[in-house]
Length: 330
Ligand code: GDP
Image 1 (tube, protein in one colour):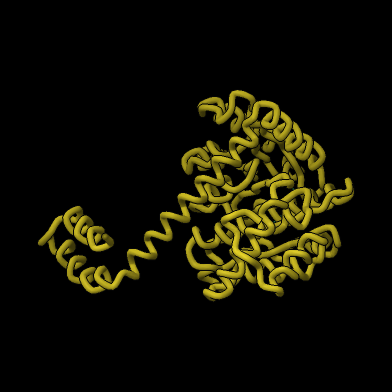
Image 2 (cartoon, helix red, strand yellow):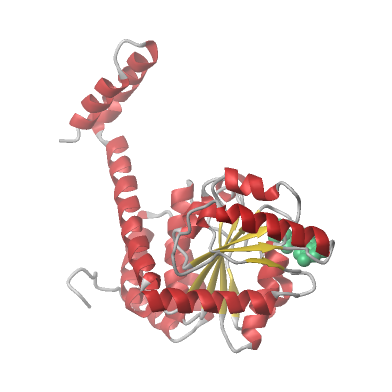
C-alpha cells in the first residue's frame, strides 16, 4: 500500500481478492460497485480500484467503433472467438452515452454476441448508464482496469459511430479501429467528422456482399488517409476489407493489431500514449470535479439565476458574469 491508498474494509478486501483470483462474480460485483451513484459506494469503489491498480495494465485495449448496423457485434463475436481459440481471455465493454436517455444500452448486449457470451473465457458488460458521456466513459475506464486486474488479455471497448463517444474511446484504448460500410461517400463522412484522424486501423466490413465495391471503398479510404497527417511516423493506418459474417479477414485483423502493438512498443509510443491518457483522465476528473463544486457552491446557486437573466438580456457581458461567479469560489 502506498501513502495515497485508503485502507480497505473486509468486504472490499474480499472483492479485491476475488477479482485477483479470477472469480467472475467478484468481477461483476466490483463493476456494479464502480457504477453505483451512491456516495458510500463511490468511496468504496475508489479504495477497491486503488488496490487493483497495481495489477492492471496487462491487456491490449482495443477500441471498436462504427455506425449502428455496420456489424460491430458480429465482428466482435468473430474476433473474440478467434482470440479465445488462441487461448486468450476477452472482455467486451461499451461506451454508449445514449444509454442514460434510454435506460439501457444495445452495445455490449449479450444477446448480440450469443456464442461469445457463453464462453467462460469471455466477459461482456453493457454500457453503464451514468449520465453524461464523461460519466459513462469514466465508469468504463475503471471497469477496464478491473478487467485487467482479473487477467483478461484483450479488452474490447465498443462504441457507436456518432458524436463524441469515439473520441472518448480512442482516449482510453491502445488502438482505435473504425468499421465502415462499403458505400461510396461513407469515407467522406468519416473525414468530415474527424474520425479517420483518430483511427489506427480502418475496416471495410460486409465485403462478402459486393467484393468490388469493398475494394473500391478501400482504395478511396486509403487515398483519403493520404490527406491526413499520420499520428505516428512508425505506423501507416491499414485499411482492410472483411466479412464479419463469414469470419473472413479476422485473422488478418488480429495480425495488424499485433503489428501495431509491436511497432508502438518498439518506438516507446505504446507506453507514452498510456501515460498521456492517464494524465488526460486526471485533468478531465479535475475539470468535472471543479464544475460540480462550482454548481453546488451556495453563493453561486444564489446568484446564478439573476446573472443568467442579466446575460440573456444583455444587461451584463458573459465574461463579467463568469468572472463574478468564479470569484465566489475563493
Ligand atoms: P452493429 O449494430 O454494428 O452491432 O451490427 P450487427 O453486428 O448487429 O450487424 C447488423 C446486421 O449486419 C446483422 O444482420 C448482421 O448479420 C449483418 N452483418 C454483419 N456483418 C456482416 C458481414 O460481414 N456481411 C454481411 N452480409 N452481413 C453482415
